[in-house]
Length: 227
Image (cartoon, rainbow, N blue to C red; front, side):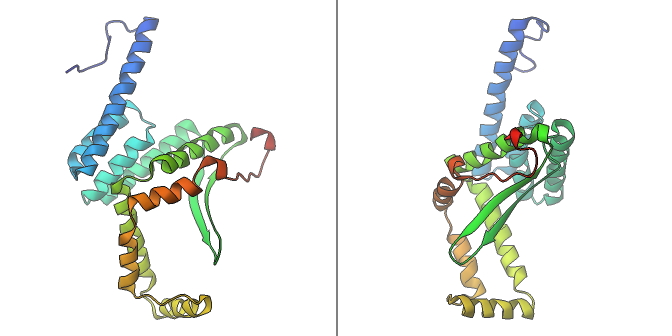
């Protein structure tokens, strides 16, 4: 088992830089794969350790931070997971300067809908920001979501549904919407069961259909030559 920096006795030789970079990339990939495997086996402490090691190798690895946050969340350390998210966002904003505001949004209607990603950035970084978003969506389209992320998404959605029906007003609005749209009325337990029934294969199928880069539309406000 090799530890330390490869070829550390050759710090200034050009060929050593290339070999060192290749080695670091392989170690990073191994750490990320090990973190994902640990998550799949529900060994969250090991997943966190591998994710932190990967983040130390690449401070801008979104996958390392994402895996680390999932592990922290599973370990009931959600406040630390939020701190990691803020740290990563700060690093992207201040050191890379790609975007000052990023979020996703959805709009659902009777027959159609829309899922979008908003990014606020400068003209000089617009292309890099757009490519980063395309890469992330393409990754979801090609590979779907890991089971750990799907489980966390289900938990969040079920919590939002439950909280949204706490008030009498919200329940009355829901009853009116069911009547107006001609949809069958479903109890809270039925809706939560539908969320739980979603599989990773179904998510991957939908992602392949709607997240494919060729199906995306870019709308920009600003100098058009950057696109």
